[in-house]
Image 1 (cartoon, each protein chain N blue to C red):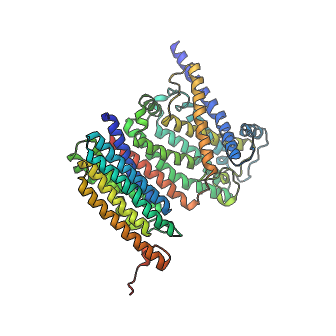
Image 2: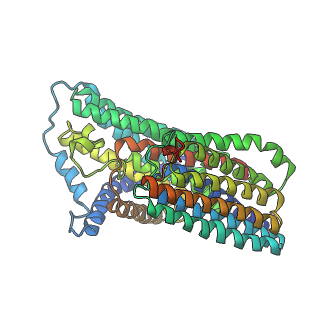
Image 3: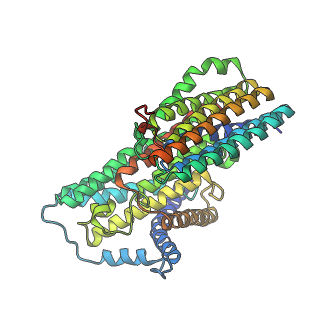
Length: 219
Length: 320
């Protein structure tokens, strides 16, 4: 792989990860949000694959396959079942309206680029220069968790944060060791399983999966 | 003598571009209507129908509201004049149009904006509440599209180190890898949304409706008749052809003429017609499958375009 096409592919993959995280805040339909999340997982896997092939790092290629299987297929499939259960599967009234949150994502991206200057200075490669995109994805995920009300969109926010951390790790350090990646994946998988169980129970009890309904404690 | 030849070449370029864009724009409307009709299972009007309509309107009597002032008269004229100016000097048929050194992208955006503002003022001038409503809606949408458009232009200009329009087209022609860069792709997405909003196509505005509650553009031109209405139609179709032409030349520049020879211009015109025609058919096909967006949901769409443009600028800055 030539250096120019390596850089171009890496830019395309990292750019796609960031755009997917913006689109999750753009769309209201929960089904569409989960599909975009699956696309983001695939883009993240592609970034790891390109890095692995370029550095001839077999473990990283393995991690890429794992990332696609987990973040691109397994987690979105689980969330999709939760969405199918929820009849009004749209983010109807987020705490911050959609145009304002889109402008906020723009501001968060600029913030990520500003605060990531030392990281970029530390890793003077093509990959290092793209690391702020991961940081921006992380910030956007935190923002999504703060302003969205539906359980599914909050889990998606959490997964955005996770994907952002993974992207920064791939770009700045050439990826985690396989063991760490496995551990982190397992953690996230457990979180999603717990959230799904919670969502299912909430749906059975209240008929909606809106976390704002959970205000009081009962026996 | 060479100066005379140079002048002759420039005149030829302007004449060819004006004819291609003005006539092509009207035919483009016909093509889009025909595509929609066919996909909806109707026969639809012939492709040259808008051209015939304009000829017919030209021969009709001119009726103006008694309350109208000169602003009402000037609106369509300014609209057509700005569109024709850009059509004559933009890199449409050839990448070396006259005045190519000073055809700045930002200037083009503002010249076109002048036409929209003139039309909105003309709509307000008659004092009809309906036209005023259309004007205020159009200006609201305009205020949201302009930032998105300017940021998208910036995303193209940053990596190229120039906002000169013919230079941007030539850059894409000489280095195709630039076109596939993430910054450019994001800018393309923003451009498509902005052009749909600016030309009043679905899902922003329905060009074929006369239903009062949903009209934006049609409400503004309700008071025009005869030759004035013909001018408005020509101005709008020219803008559509112009914006689509600039879009395809920026992102699919192949086929554009590089010089000012007659043969080159003929091939350039054919390539432009093919590319813009394909883009128009794609838009019309998309329109069949989409519904008009609620007016209050439009800011979401346009804010999305703005953020895409902004991300384009950011990636263009990083990726360098």
